Length: 333
Image 1 (cartoon, rainbow, N blue to C red):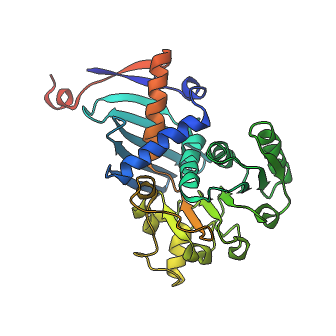
Image 2 (spheres, helix red, strand yellow):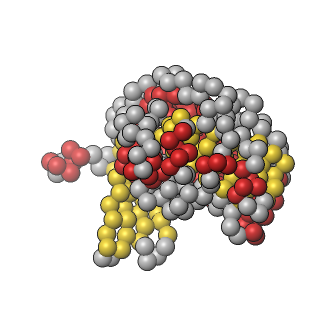
Image 3 (cartoon, one colour):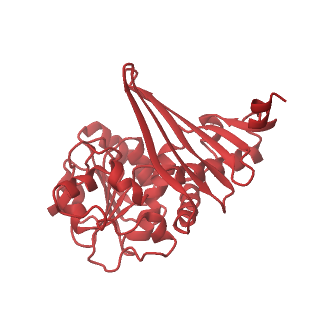
């Protein structure tokens, strides 16, 4: 028998700042870029009853952890449930089971922030955010820790939503944050663009992305989710979170392949881990357009979960739960 820690969202939601997530996730991508294993998501869907079960995982040897997400959604219920199992990378023993809801926007946002730090120009000062939900909030909160932005412009179709978003961040980060009435107004002069939507069609125009811009897109986790125009993907240095994801569920990349604009094998410059680990240069010029395609992986999940587990243990948070080893189950001893 061994004891593990069960942690609710309430147990962990005040244990880390956005910059803490970024530091943990950056190191995790470094490990994967140096050879640590991680796999893209596996998604199972059911028509009757309608629902989805998704898993993804990674092993982070230097962190000493392995794990990932398992999440489920009943389409009739229109909600999802996130469970994060965490194991010791050496012994395989369970360390913790976390409710992953509260950390989700920040661990995903941290991957985007790591990409901005690795791929955006050093002198980037203006950022456009397309979307105003929880994921857009997580992206901006973390990205604001890696660059000193002077101006943030947010657009989403509902005026009230974008205005609330702008008001929240105006008092949260050291930048001029404003809500604007169109995508084009948000993009004008932007050095960094974040798209965080559920759109099935492109939410920005290729012509609106100026030379030297970095784009982080995090709503492209399905072949039919296509936030970016294929022309933009084709002319950019394209960096997904995991190379193997690009041909599975990266909607805009697949659209560019289908349009004959890029080759499925050569269209990926590198994955983020290779850039962070120094195996690929990423951006090589100030007028280069870079794209980070963030579909979600076990890399940021295991890294964030381990950080929160360590801090919760030190703070005496959570509830101990008991697990039996496989040998006991198999032998009855």
